[in-house]
Image (cartoon, rainbow, N blue to C red; front, side, top):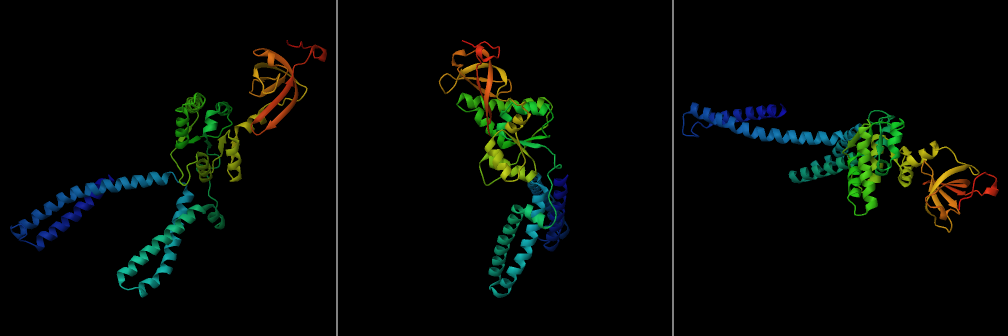
Amino acid sequence: MFVEALRFIVVIGFVLAGNRLGTSHPGLLGLSAQNSALVVTALGAAIGYIVGGVIGRGVDRLMKGAEEHVSHRHASEIVALTLGLLVGAVASIILTWPLLFFLRPQWIAGAATAFVTLIVMSFTARLAVRKRLELFGVLGVMPTAVGGASSGCLLDSSAAIDGRVLALYKAGLLPQPLCVPAFIIWEMQGIADSGDPLRRRRGQRGLDMLATLREAGAQVRVIDEDPVGTSDPDAKLVVIARRRGLPIVTSDSNLAKAAELQGVGVLNLHRLTEMLRPPVLPGEKAKVRIGREGRERGQGIGYLDDGTMVVVEGASAMLGEEVDVEVTSVLQNDRGRTLFAKVPSREGGGGLQEAN
């Protein structure tokens, strides 16, 4: 409809121009004045129809591209850009009006004025967008997140690869929709195509996890927003989180720290798991299957049902066995929790038989 309306306007313009041309030059085609005006008007209508279609489709494509670009921007960026352009226009008028009076010839003054105006408006617009939060703070207005303060969360690649994110969604602990930037998906695709079998499995698990979340009813939304100025996915993720006011869901402790320092909310899967995990204190007993040998001589490594690693002294000869152990100490760090335990002997009074 827009293309046809624009074409109609162009056709009217060419018809009027053709009629005027044919009337003012009656001998243009060697015909009478009336026939010449009629023929030139018809030619103008035909040319206008073709040219109008080209112009209409071109303008329509430009408008759709601009609309697509603007739709990925927060409203605060658009408002800040508009204010920056207005301030730049006023500033350029103040700076360039002397040029129009003192520079000669006139075309040099016009070119210098246009150059200064372009530089000033570009600078103020970019500065306003970059400093929009401070700008709105000075004006007493604080931009809100898209859809409100609880309009979802951003998943990074480590969270998508981590299987716990599905359990958190089923428990209702993840705000929806679950937004995944397109560059995060391509990052996992690159990992899935890696020659390293371990990395390949991780990438495939991340892509499968997103599909599983969607099948489980989660609102998984892919956002096609790719901030410029950096090629680091983590840095881009923080930029998007700040723009949209969304928290980041991650199991990357370094990303969590960097995001928190920049004022971005973070849901750290490791930290959340530690908070929800029932405490295991020194002196308590647990049942562990020894899966491999430890770094130190005589140590065996096992895992609790929740994934906590247990280092068992004197259990290196018990590979594949499920044994009762007694926790001796707990080590807590950013990557999680590690338990140190021993196998109680019969003489230890625990009623547990020491494994051979």
